[in-house]
Image 1 (tube, rainbow, N blue to C red):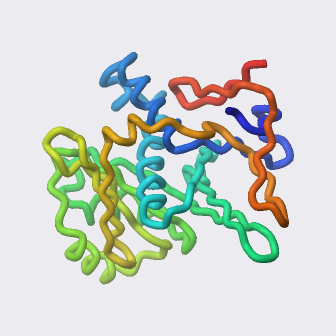
Image 2 (cartoon, rainbow, N blue to C red):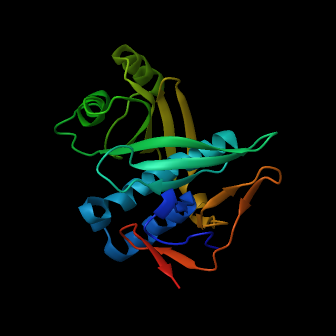
Length: 236
């Protein structure tokens, strides 16, 4: 059920937040329609990056037990996505944020290692102590063990909050690994078949943070859909 979406211009700093399951289902649906164009055509860049971001958020959910939501940042700066989780406290509620910057390591002929790709694509351009970097690793690329990467990146001392990658670790693309390689090594595996079978309880939300009764979701009575290019459309 769409929740509290009043317009698509994000007036008054209002953000439409997307459930990670919804973004992943959109990716799968779009792939069935356009095939490999989804993986290479720039018009689908946000759709691809939203899929990568959503896999990361579901891994964080598995690790912490808390739900996360994402919304694309519609400009040319950083981050690519703002991600939010809503936390109920003793005297009110808070909205926790991850500033997520996503990139794809695809040009192995130019960057022959994860570290080189990381430095060339992002670390030479971004210095933000609050940014989380997330790299999609192609199946054909051999990624060193998490501990080994962690030791190399610590020597670089990047000026970012943390660094992760998403990669397929099974022959049938069933198991995907989301690994933190900086500052603390950690790996979380997700079953992709299970993700595709899971239906989002709320596809889109705008949250009202109540002070006493937990997080309240306000219905708008409007239907929100995503286009294959990850644009929001409200159906009256």
